[in-house]
Length: 482
Image (cartoon, rainbow, N blue to C red; front, side):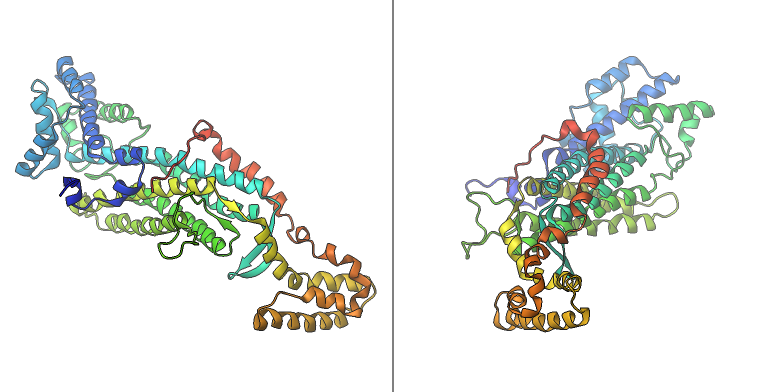
């Protein structure tokens, strides 16, 4: 069949083939993984040499010169024979480094490369996500600032409630994202290295290599940890680092997923009201059957993927719960899926949300019409207070307003008409003393409280400071492929 290739003959994860960025896809790629293994073997050899083991400069140089040229076909053949991925790559590395072959992986267990590489990938993955989240926060902060004082209907129980502003509502979204920013940064800063701990975490093999010298074993751990770019290693491990580390990392990603799902659900609800829309391309088709439609496709994609991201956190929770004693291998297959997928999913969610927040469209006239439809009911207390100031009786006024409000509500609900409460008030001679005040009493800006001031202070004190470390990365634009 013309145009068919091997890649179309087997399942491809849409997270990679359709959605995620090249940098995040590479972070969890085989090439990144196995070149990192080789770097870790080089770090180990260098540190062991510096601490007196009989390893030569030539052996280290040979390893360094072959750190990138991995024969993946040979490695796959070796793994089929040995049924062991780490040993397959030890043999493959040794094949191109015959001089260094005797000292590759010296004293180490498989988790030396496996777990340490996972920690590097988690760290680097968070380093990819943090500036992306910063850009989303920046775009949304600009949006909140622009619309800080534009009145809009607030909703509680998805029923019209007291007015807020478009910018104040955006600050509700921002507050969640700023919390996510702090959570991601904390998770990144809390990550440590597994280091060189041996088969059950006791460092027995290294103590033997260094003939009982405890200080040299500790120094070996420190040196390798530093070479890998970590400030600390976990002081105690089993064969693996505690799988609670995975929980900690994936929990903050799942929490981010919850934030994005809420934001994008709000955008979808507002799109239905025709108050706010996500960007819509010039030639984009909303529906194959209904040409007029402008579906919130990007927000829907975020919600769809966010559900997956939130679900994935159950994997590390259950994995950590069933790690027997010093370790069991039933974590391995699960982590191969849950760790990369969480980062890949978070990555595309943030890219999509950046695209949305860079092009949100607001329709002030629609928002104003919705306010006019509901505001007369909300203004009844203001009208009563104005009548009392003009010498009226509160109870009499309340009864008048109650009757007129029910009549207006019947027009809206039973006849499908507009809210005519204001016209009814104007037509009733009882309200003659305040007719000149009605327009002022119904000015939407008098119903938004301190929303604009809250926006200004929140952006200044809570949002902008969080973005400071990422100033140089703010200009990156997102062009969605699909």
